[in-house]
Image (cartoon, rainbow, N blue to C red):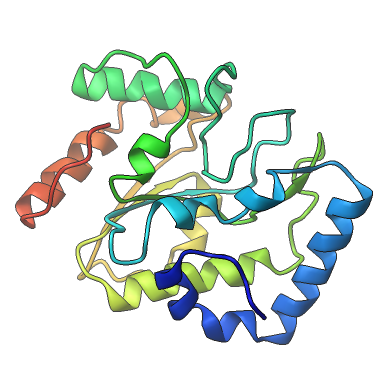
Length: 220
């Protein structure tokens, strides 16, 4: 199957695109876009990969679903377009950066500025029906994004994986601690952020690790 995705990822994931599950997934997603309101826009499904090539990836932040509200999702986990109010989880992320690094909370929630520096903002499920959280789970996306994580974990070294919440931690359980830095914290949602996300220091820890490995830091 010819999937429109950034070239380095296309090469790494070519076997996945030819597996039966991906063909079934593609048929499901195509029908959903034809019959329902689905986010993000079709051309933005693989936006995280467009901004952050395989070679450039230094940090991986795992989300679960795209935002399912109007105009929010644009293919990057936790990110929203300019002009869209910050969802609570994103606001807590910015609050932790402010506490951890002393950086002011930005004027917009578009995290493509992180992605362009090598932060892969990856949701486990890349599409969702409007106003129906989890509606595209267990259709095949998880198998695809598992392979993305596996390729990164096996073929690269010195990556930082920010694993927020039990779902992300379970999804990336197979990553070697010898080759990469895994940072665990509760999810930044208002339900759990106060249990350890706020105060986790992940952003300074990530930069300290990258610095130690001779890699450029991320401008959070």
